[in-house]
Amino acid sequence: MASVVEICNSALNQLGASTILALTENSKNGRLCNARYETIKDQVLRSHPWNPAIKRRALAADTATPAWGFAKQFTLPSDCLRVLQIENYNQDYKVEGRKILTNDDACKIVYVANISDPNEMDVMLRETISAALAADIAYAVTANATLAQRMYDKYQEKLKDAKHADASEGYNTDPTMGPTDIILAEDFLNSRL
Image (cartoon, rainbow, N blue to C red):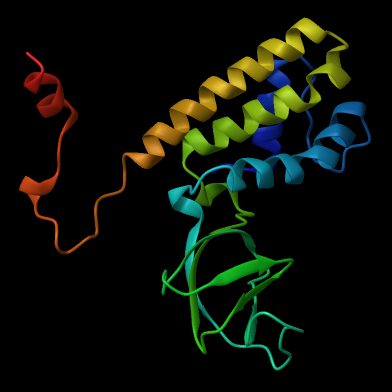
């Protein structure tokens, strides 16, 4: 079972620093992890439509309406980090603050949700968050700018690999497309021979 402390300790291990027993630990590393973990996790989650973080929700219209420009407003779910899609993609809409403004009476969204339980994340996402945290706290822990840059580079590599693996788990849901309508990379490359 994964935990936030394990993710933080993975980051600290990458820095060659002392690990912690709890986020509330009164040590420099404990205070740094406690202060930075949530922000870094949310940043990584917001950076990509991670499969384990995707949610769908039908929103209820607010009783208040926008001052001008749109007829309706809908409050985003409290766990929404990023709106990915609105069901009726032809409708005009605007995300402002924690509201979606639109002229439609209904609003169904797909969004990136804030995941608080690391066990809901796959291992590559947890490792990416750990690498991001290591990059973020590297200079504060080690006072070594070179190591901080290496940790940032490592984070970028982990992020790229995790995004690739995550994106490969999807499929085309367009019912009008059949298997013969999909162009494979090897078909394209072979056509050039």
